[in-house]
Length: 191
Image (tube, rainbow, N blue to C red; front, side, top):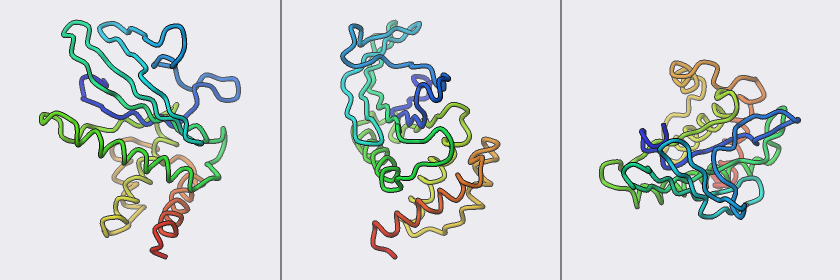
């Protein structure tokens, strides 16, 4: 899917394991391990670098199609500070994660081939609805604030749920999005 859809950024909002239970298979190799390359069928994935930034890690991956020899860079941004239950306490840290996604997106858009000027962003957690929905909704609403667009969180969530049921699962996740936006406005000195 990553190759087929031309995904340049993967935003992961879960640890591989939480509370002793596997939440996500580790599909990318560890940097510095004996083998920093893994092969899945026709694709070879190599970890080029990893940068830890407090509550998230940015990893650069090289993805090579073994049949054609074509290579692509894929950025893996893993938010590492989400508690097992509830939402993050550090709003500034979560906003810095969203800013990192935007920064990497600007970079990939400026260096991408003309055939895919705005590659899709892949966001995932374990179930693909709770934390994933919070990231997607927060990112859309921050963009609305930045571009002076109408801020209708319930309507945007309704539209998102037409594409993926159950996005933003709990009331605490929903109110977290509001808290993120308030923090964004405070940090931007707009309130």
